[in-house]
Length: 88
Image 1: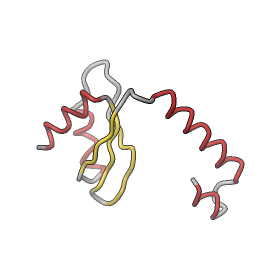
Image 2 (image 1 turned 180 degrees about the vertical axis):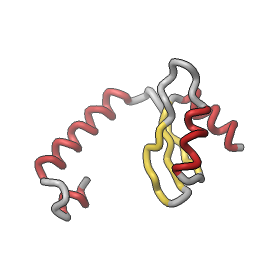
Image 3 (image 1 turned 60 degrees about the vertical axis):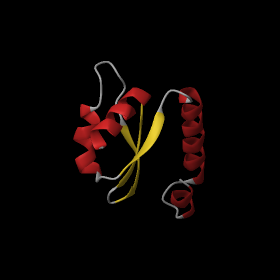
Image 4 (image 1 turned 120 degrees about the horizontal axis):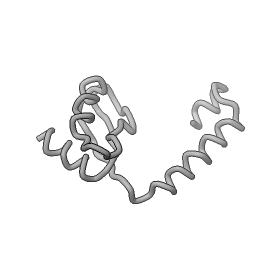
């Protein structure tokens, strides 16, 4: 967000609103999920993330793309445990 604001891509006021909204959401969901690193391209990871989802459970999501085959995955602890079992 900071680089988008500094580069002029995102107006400063909009950047501030985005940061506040993100912070509120993080506070609301604190303790409800976990994160894990996954060494896979995003396109290859999506079907695996969906396969690790139990009925009625929130989905696993790509929280960050850190490189061509380096992802941060976020979601419910049980789904992340299934992902870990699938990936090993």
